[in-house]
Length: 324
Image (cartoon, rainbow, N blue to C red; front, side, top):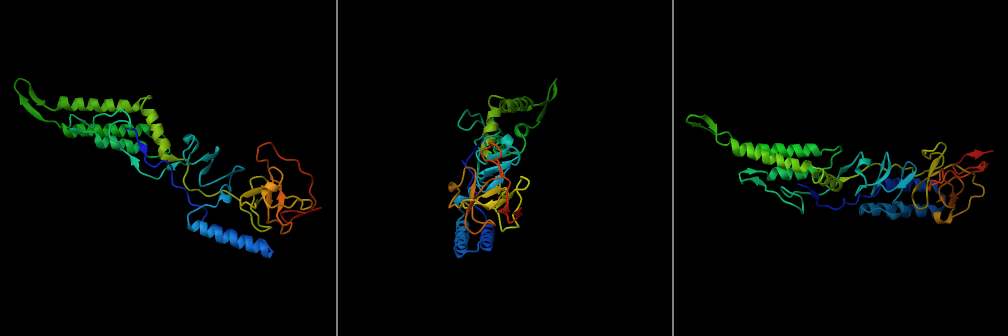
């Protein structure tokens, strides 16, 4: 009565929509003044649309969503109150309040554990328990928000008792010196006792609980489709806010959101990729410091080592403001 999911892993979630790719394309054209920048944006937009048409996700945008200051890939991960969690297989379903059913077909195997001990699918061939056990498998293999094990087990027992009642209905005969006697009473009672034994088996900590937990791990993914909580950047003066007060979000050369505390343009080094920048910094092409990509510092230290020390900025700022 333990179910096993036929599909080992959920199908890969599609990448960003074509509309999102087109929006990135339009923003890029509006914010990059050079001919080279416009050409780059055009190629990026066309590539995005092509990849979305194929149902693929471009590699450089694999971790462009933000979850409490942590970048994550919304195709394979979730943002939960306890932080980033893997969608499937989920390490701990208790940390997944919005878990959903894994696509696929649930396997049923009658009365008994999949690949293990089997039990009769009927009581003396008359009272059928097969559908009751298969429904129990289906219940175990259905992703539940709350612990539904007792409900699954109780429904199986009720189903078996109903089969017993249907197979051995009251049948009375008159017996001399005794009176009216139900000839099916003993069989029906024994059938009910057998149903109770099956119920007791799936309720045990040794067999039933591990079977249910294993079925739920196979049936549930940590979350379904959810919005990408990110800040992809934009033109100067319209940058969305990050979680840290005073921070804004830029899009890196690699295509990921990057929370940044506006800093002075003076002295910032040029770059071709974020690998050219100091540890924790990012290479960004769309800022108010000109059309060339530059290295900018984060609002926080990704490694968790604490905030970086910053000198008081002066002059033109990366976000378009000016400090005296």
